[in-house]
Amino acid sequence: MQASTAPTGLPVYVGGRIAVVRLLLLSDGTRLRAGVYDQVPARPVLRLAGADAENGRGLSLVKALTGGRWWTEPEGGGKVVWVELGAERDVPQ
Image 1: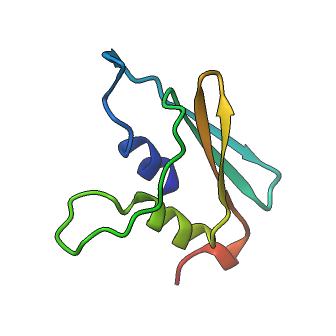
Image 2: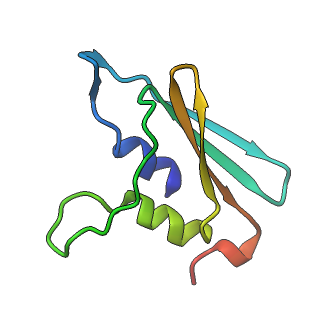
C-alpha cells in the first residue's frame, strides 16, 4: 500500500521535466523499510481531505498503516519518504 500511495501522489512533471521516482526496499526479516525518492525537495504535508475530495489522503493512509512510523530525508536535491512496517501487529485486521 505505501509503495503505491507515495508515488501516485507525485506530480507527473517537476520543473517541466518528467519526474524521477525511485522505490527503495530494505528488510532485516522482521521489519520492512520502504522509501520513495522524488525530485521535489518540499516535505509532504498531512492534510485532512474532505469527504468528496479526490486527493489528499495519501499521508493519512501511510500514517494509519504504519502507526505513524514515517519520516523524510533530503536526498540529491529531492527527498526520500520512508515508512517502516514491523511484524504482524502492523497488518490491518
